[in-house]
Image 1: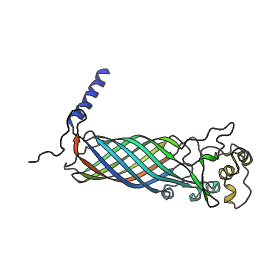
Image 2 (image 1 turned 120 degrees about the horizontal axis):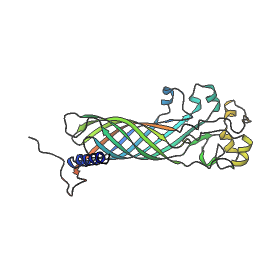
Image 3 (image 1 turned 135 degrees about the vertical axis):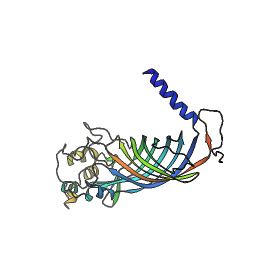
Image 4 (image 1 turned 90 degrees about the horizontal axis):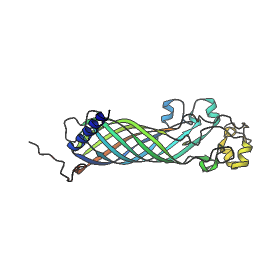
Amino acid sequence: MKNLLLIFVISIVGVLQSSAQYLEYGIGFGGSVYWGDLNAPDFGTNIGNTNLAVQGMAKLNFSKYLAVKANLLYGKLSGDDSRSFVDWQKQRNLNFTSSLTELSVLGELHVFGYNFGEDNPLSPYVTAGLGVFHFNPKTTFQGNEVALQPLGTEGQGLPGFSSKYSKIALAIPFGAGAKFQLTNSMNISLDILARKTFTDYVDDVSGSYVAFDELAAGNGVLAAQLGNRIGEFFGQSEPVSLPTGSQRGGEKVTDYYFTAMFTLTFKLNRNIQLFGAHKHRTDCPRF
């Protein structure tokens, strides 16, 4: 086993040494879509929650098959029970919007290989990595935008309940795409990525209701009003009474979000040599 591992490592190093590494940088535009407790059950309706997203990236290509990129993404996530066709979800009557800022590092594997200037300009790839993102769910109440995390709408911060969740969480991005060479130094790519997050509070909804009077006494009337909005759906001023522990969300499954991005990238004029002491120009003589 040790010998096989050594052969594998030597082979990878050999590939990197024998290949010219080069850098790319670029900017992308597309959409971001949330998937969690407040999404509509059918895919078509949930696509209506798509929001504009932009990203900037820098990529180090180790060889024609392998690359690693750092990516900064900014977008928006949103969900709304009123978009559902399911009665219980409409009656729950919750909604949110959140800004999204994500920093991630991803590996790319180009299935058939890719190099600038080669005969095949199209290259499909698979990608996965690790990211950290910031979110801040808000809702509109009586004409005002209200941040939900400080309120503790599911009793966070009260004795016997969990503490208030962090607005920074980890995510695992994964997906696939393809890039197409436009010129000897520029290409365009399209990729679709999912993010499995390690939080169930992107939408401020996870577990159970807290009885109105109990939540109002502990976290304030506003927290109780936004924790249970069923009464608003029925047009009544008095809150609908639900006992503590009644299901509000699905805490067994964490939230996801997706992006579909077109990215325009540019190759730097010079190669780099990670395993050597010199740099050299990328352009090879043609005969």
